[in-house]
Each structure stands twice: as structure tokens, then as C-alpha cells.
Length: 119
Image (cartoon, rainbow, N blue to C red; front, side, top):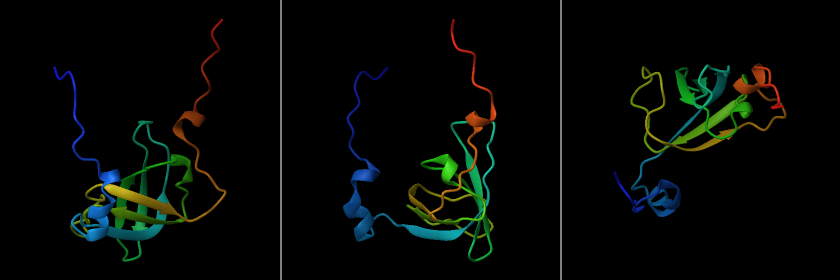
């Protein structure tokens, strides 16, 4: 069992590597095609149709309620997806932008009644 870990690399602090290009990045833009709650609250997914016509599936990073069908989405990935036939985004998502909107998608936990309060 490890007693102590030493952090030696963290992508979010490596802005220089991303800006210099030593960490490849790829921008994928499209429209959110589906954003329904799943049975796994810690891994909410969405489907998007890219501007090139491909369909991709990805994990909802950030606020999962912001992924609303019909809104535009832009993903910045650490590496590009291999081909249009690949059904998921490859690599690490570095940033997500979603078209500004006040609309929200229900989150899984809001679909179930709250547990009874302790007595």
C-alpha cells in the first residue's frame, strides 16, 4: 500500500505544453443530439453530431444539466479522435464550451424522489 504520493505532472497546470503544441489538441464542434440521464450518476453521457456529420458520444464534463439537445457544443481534446467511424471522443477532454442558454436538462438525481428525512 502506498503511504504517500508525489504529484509530478498535472495537465491543468501544464498550459505551456498545450500552448506550445507539445500536447496535441483537437477541436470538435457540433450540436448536442441527445443528453438523457443514465443509470450511472457519476458518468452522465451525451451524443453529438459534428459539423462533418459524424456522431460522437462523450462524458458530460462540468455541469451535466448544461448539455441540452439542440445547443451547439465545442470540445477541446488533448488528442484528436482517430476517424469519423470512432463512436467516442479519444483522449482527454481539456475544455468544453456550450452555447449560452437558460435551458437545462434534468439530472438523474432530480428524476427520483428525495429520500425521507431522518427522524
